[in-house]
Image (cartoon, rainbow, N blue to C red; front, side, top):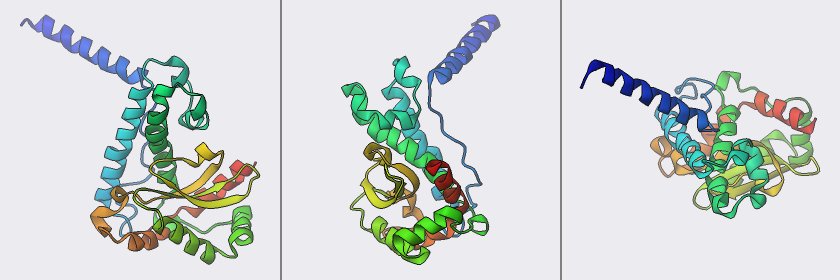
Length: 228
């Protein structure tokens, strides 16, 4: 094959790849810290696989599910989930599962942070925690219990309900609080891929450890923003 032909094919392939990427409305967000930043509580290899493989798969599958539908491609993933019942029937399950996985993990990476910088709940958020749960310590106990009680795969969520009150509950699989008209503040992932490399079947140990790397500054700021 002539060199010119090879160059033309290479150029065509690059353009096609770029066009394909441009058509994909959802992309994997960058992890806001190094893979090993949460050591020793969450190991680097778990973070690498969790972010680069599992989350990427949710993004890819969501893009496939809505491929060719320009109206859906213009919506954010949160909007897709909030409007799930109005979406075409043939995409609802994929949006619920894949879109939920994308939205949940995108928030999860921000909820976590290196232990020295994780801070403590502050301002109005700290006051709301005390008012709703009695104290930060009691809230963390209930959060661990809620996450431990998830049967199989799912999440423990702290959210704001439609009245702006704090709600702590669990959800199966990749269901988002947005499906129940709630605005998620923070979530704890209890799918086995979130902890199995380090903790195997010891979910309780993982739940005790992850509280050391909650970015309470971020959650406090998110509370203020959502209440506003």
